[in-house]
Length: 222
Image (cartoon, rainbow, N blue to C red; front, top):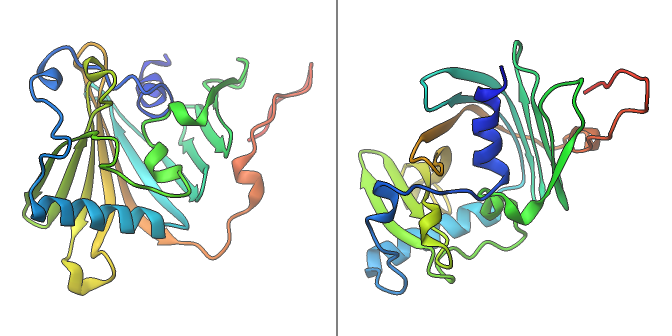
């Protein structure tokens, strides 16, 4: 029953970007990037560092093709919330220190260090992709910019791909917007998460980024 949410749990909280198959076939680029690729990485860093508060709808496609939807909230640095739409009950909340995961109201909340999420580049106060040689590839397609990343200290863990729409630098400071990410798990299975209806938010309720354990005998509320 919880298989679909668990794929997003893996994608967000465990840094298990593992893929023993094709993910290990290409080496990290490290410092071996072209001037154009370096410029694109700098644009991505600029965009991520300028992210503040936003909300969006998300759609997750699990490896088995099943689809889940819900609401995504971001309050940088350090805070995010994924709230699944019914019938799924999972809730994922980052409070700046921990990522809390509630898979079901009847189950205990699980907590993981915020640094263990592959989305930590979005949550960090200062984003500097490329400095740790985690870049595998920078790819351009029609209107899209893709950045493939892998932990250089554990390349067997696989890859995370961040996908941005690209309107060109003339469209703004960076001209890009995060729309999707793709994670490969330990079995080489792919999980895709896409964002739509993205809106900047002047203010988000701080309670969105708090997930407390329910008192004994009480019913937990989101």
